[in-house]
Length: 265
Ligand code: ADP
Image (tube, rainbow, N blue to C red; front, side, top):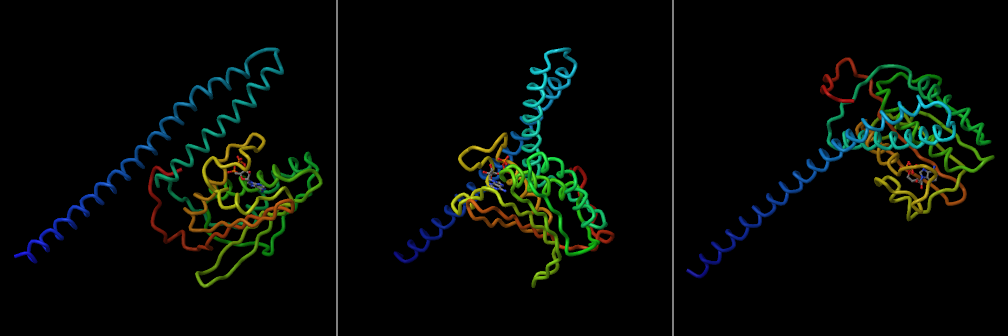
């Protein structure tokens, strides 16, 4: 009798534990859904009045300096709001991938070109170098653009005058398959090993500093790379520079791929 009671007890205990775990899982899911809804709503609410403020500021006559300040700060805030919105959409899994089939080397070269004047203004040497003349593959233009723009603008931002920024692309083969390898390397201030572990966290900035930054760019970049089935790594030596390496799988099946889900970005 004792033995049976004990085994009954054990059974009941394990059932209770299971129920508890289920409740906890439900709670976590609800919390995640709430968080994502909250982000999306609040960023939408921010965007509308900001757009009005920016539009109105353009119509003010005179007050050049004030107008410029309103414009610059407004655009910065709008940039942050848009980044947050992108991030929450990515995290909620509601973003689809939209592939085109084209030469990604030409596209990367084109994206890089728009940074030449910014680099020149900051007296930086800025180079694009590709080991492949062309590379036909499926890629998502908007997502690749966001990834590249985030990495290059960081490299320019955190590299003092007379430094160097290099964008390098090549093809890599591993056990898992073939990859497009994209390297953005700078000779800037670098990131300590302690901070390196956290640069992909949302809102993280070394020393909470960064001129006009938000700490969202790299979190967004990592989500984008993830959704494309790629990887991103950072190597750095404080004072000597930083290298971000992105790998995107070379896919060549967009014609046969399942149609992407509607409602994506
Ligand atoms: P933001 O640039 O808007 O501050 P990010 O998420 O893009 O946000 O970057 C987070 C932080 O990582 C930056 O504030 C900076 O401290 C550090 N960081 C990113 N890229 C570099 C780089 N190329 N060199 C040095 N530090 C960097």
